[in-house]
Length: 75
Image (tube, rainbow, N blue to C red):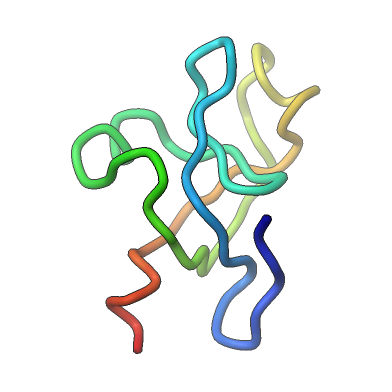
């Protein structure tokens, strides 16, 4: 499980749902960015979130991460 942090919006692990969406806690992650730079189970720190613009997934994930990093990169 993730948690809110003082350094960022949220900190947790990358997971993938049954529809193939990447997410961390309640936040959807950008598919292409996640595929290119991360792997399932990575601990990340989310720095910025926006309202999810996708009508396909915004009911499940109302917020989408705009900026996130491996948590170890910030320490």
